[in-house]
Amino acid sequence: MQEDALLIKRAQKGDAEAFEALMTPLEKRIYALCLRMLTSREDALDCAQDTMLRIWRALGTYRMQSSFSTWALRIATNACLDMLRKRKNKPTTSLDALVDVGFAPQAEPEGSPETQAENADQRDAIKSAIAILPEDMRSALILRDVQGMAYEEVADVLQAPLGTIKSRINRARARVREKLTSTPEPFFENIVYADERRKDV
Amino acid sequence: MTCADFLSLLPQYPDQMPDDDTTAVFLAHAAECAECANLLVEQEAMLLALSTMDDDLEVPETFSSGWRKAVQEEALARPSKRGFASWKYAVTAAAALVVVLGGTALMRAGLILPDYANPKDQVSTAVSLEYDVAPSAASPATMMAYEMTGTASMKRSVDATVEGASYDVETEVEDAGSGNGAILLHSATINLSSERYDEVMASISSLLEANDGWVSYRSEYGESLEVNPEAGRYAYWETRVPVQALPQFVAAVSDLGHLTGSEMVTEDVSASYYDVQGRLDMYIAQRNRLNELMEKAEAVSDIIEIESKLGEVQYSIDSLSGRIQNWDSRAKDATVTISVTETAHAKEFARQPLRQRLKAGLANAVYALQAFAQDVLVFLVMALPYVVFIAAIGGIVYLVIYLVRKRKMRRTKK
Image (cartoon, rainbow over all chains, first blue to last red; front, side, top):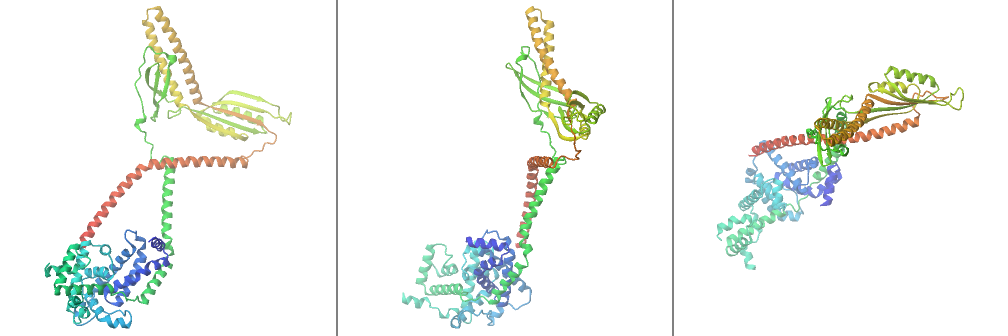
């Protein structure tokens, strides 16, 4: 933590190397957040790049009132929302409509070919389910259930009351589960249900 | 727990359950109800999938290298901005220094922060004299603070305790000629050396006459260098010159020869002067009272006693009057002592020797710095109430603007 504080101070004075050291642990989280929020790889790259520069330029305003990662993710979330708003202003086919006809959000080439083969359908299904969530639920769910942040941290990032965040996450989970059970490729096809499990107990 | 309850709690499982008891009941229901148990499995699978969906995510190289390059380019292009923070502080510090030093200079010139007289400093009290006062035991105990009113009159108060009786004296005294009520005694000393001794002596006499001055004491000794080249004459003058003519007289005399030394002294004897004046007035009033008593006295013993006390009072009056007159005289006419030394090869330096000038310059600079530092401190203390007042106004304005903006933001969000 002290090292981070030193890096932050150096970066605030314009030290690019200190900034790189500070942001390297966060770059995957930021990129992942942008990817899950925007669902498009190109948009996610642009947004993540923009986020990094926003953080660099806004470093002088960071007053250590929250953790650095919380502050950085807040900037990333706002950048994603800005891009989503810009997208809304452009006439596009709704993602829901595309998903209904079998379109899956662009999958990121992830992991080894073996794991890709095993989990590709499941991942695509869950990505589709997240993609159709409203922005406020989507961001809360990604930060909490995908990135594993604490509820208080999520509330801090999204600048919303804790109760509101919990409510959004609950509703998001319910919608995602509902979507997963209703997709043509059942997400839950390969899981072991309680009936079978109970026999083992 | 019913299946409906189970379903409503399901999204909250496992990290938003109300309490452990509810969780236990929830899980117990799942153990009994196959459908609900399946729902629980689906929930757990979904959460697991969510938590691991980014585990194998690889950050694209284009992104990773892209932001690094962009930041480095901005950092290189921003040296002026990097230094801007320190420049900002330097400019702020310079501005503060200009304000403090400039304010001090303006204060010294009397252009800002006028020195308002605090009315509490003015003290005046009534006077009463008691018959059984022993003037010889009279001793003004304390001179209270007095205040120049800026007019031709001064008020002062004296707290005089005499044999257990206390006196409060209020007097009004005339301006003793200083223009603002202060009694200032000016004196100057001029030491000259010259090879034109006789000319200098004659010039001093002429200057005295021209400036309505007079000689209170003069002495000369030594042999002329013409007679004895090893000797040389020396003259000492004590002169009195009207105060108004002092500056030009001193300047003129200083130019008569080589100035080997000079001194100007101004002594403020106002406190002593008015103390003595007050005591004098007291004694005069006492004398008048005693004279009244003398007229009424019938017994010889009373007459003798009153006469004795009158004598003592008169002695004090004469003594104090003499002091007052001496001060009046010295305040009216400045005392200038002049010494003239005849030298054979006196060079008419336009300036003093370098070493002397350096020493004098350094001493003057140190003194001036000390005086300025004191003035800076006085300025800061005098300016403090104004600064606090302005800061308070600024704080209120800032708060109002902040609250207005906050309200606008709330409305925008709604």
